[in-house]
Image 1 (cartoon, rainbow, N blue to C red):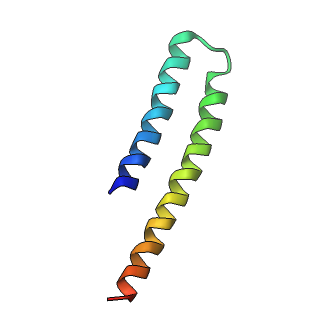
Image 2 (image 1 turned 90 degrees about the vertical axis):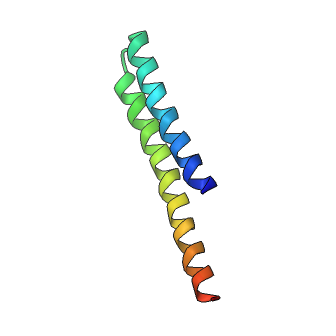
Length: 62
């Protein structure tokens, strides 16, 4: 549950950054949004895979 909340917070940070860059009128805001979004997406996917492996591992022990 903690990892799910952490992933949600990461996505919220990306959305907040996107809104702030657009409000500031940064020229390459979409570029920065894309790069940061991809990096955060990779982290979220890695966390998801770790959660799946932990779940499978704990179910095998039962």
